[in-house]
Amino acid sequence: MLKKWMGAALAVAGLALAGMATAQAAEPVRIGFSIAQTGLFAAAAPSQLNAYELWKEQVNAAGGLDVGGTKRPIEFVMYDDQSNPDQTVRIYEKLITEDKVDLLLAPWGTPMHFAIAGVLEKYQFPVVGNSAASVQLRDLKPGNIWFPTSAIPDRMAEELAKMLTANGAKTAAVITNQLPFSLEIKQFLIPALDKAGIKVAVNDEYPPDVKDMTALLGKVKAANPDAVLALSYPNDSILYMNQAKEVGIKAPFQFVLVGPTIDFFGKMFGKDLDGIVTIGHWTPAKADWPKAKPFFDAYVAKFNANPDYLDSALAYMSCEILQQAVATAGLDKAKIREAISTMTFDTINGPVKFEGVQNVTTPTSFLQFQDGKAQLVWPPEAATAPYKPRS
Image 1: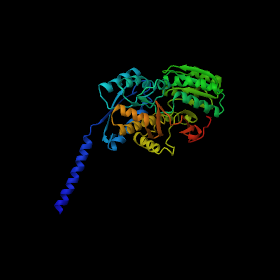
Image 2: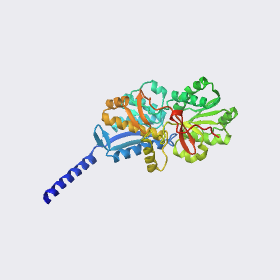
Image 3: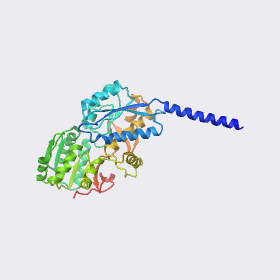
Image 4: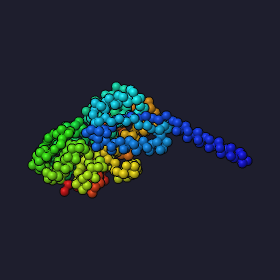
């Protein structure tokens, strides 16, 4: 009997070991992308890359990516695009034609997403975007890229005008970085403000590599608007924060487009960030998003930093969407495209469903920093805290 028992136990152990060996021997799913490790956007890109790395680690720890019912480990193929759209195009061509990756993740920023759209159409290779949004690209109706963000420029402009009206703003100054996303927002924002009866006292643009905004902000101060709307990117958002304080801008409503939600921004500005409004539609504090707080906790534990409430959340969401699509469709590109276009996805930002390239379930929202924390303050029905004028 003892011999029989030992024989059975050894057989079970052998099967378990064989199963482990099979899992370990499973061919990796190779996922390619570029990231702005150097250049103009390098300060922002780690928020995206960290989310990718966390997702990969979690999926691999759970046995691998479910590819139509078979779990396989994830392997990344990554290149530095140097914050250069032309370089990004070359990299994605290489990833598809030379590296023969199985799947793609998105690069950082609207210019890069716009740059690769043609490559994705050429090779019919689906990508879930994240740190980008474009009305122009949406209206071209590409079939292989999607935006999980609700911060689409036309919707943002309308909601920002509503928020300003609700809080009594009569005049505004709009200063705009000459990059595609900020320029698109301005294109819709100026008419939205005019329609709302808000006078635009200043409407100026500046180059992406601006080094000094003193003269421009002096003009803003002289106009004494109720609201300053800085359609900025991380580097010039830092410049705005520093020089607006030096110049003495006291507008009760101050909006800074991209940058404030990155962890280093809060560490850099501390209490000076309180009262600043920015784009964002995610928070770990929403009880009806059960996956939000676990993501936040896991990110903090791994990186000893808070996730970017905008780009880290969007990057992770894009991975969740791809993961759920691949579980249904496997690695067949046409089936993945169909899955992304038709499924409703369970994400850290709640359910996401696309119509065309656009997420149509997540409300267009804004965050405000209050006591060092980013709170959802608009729209009121989604808010985690009421808006407070900047003092």
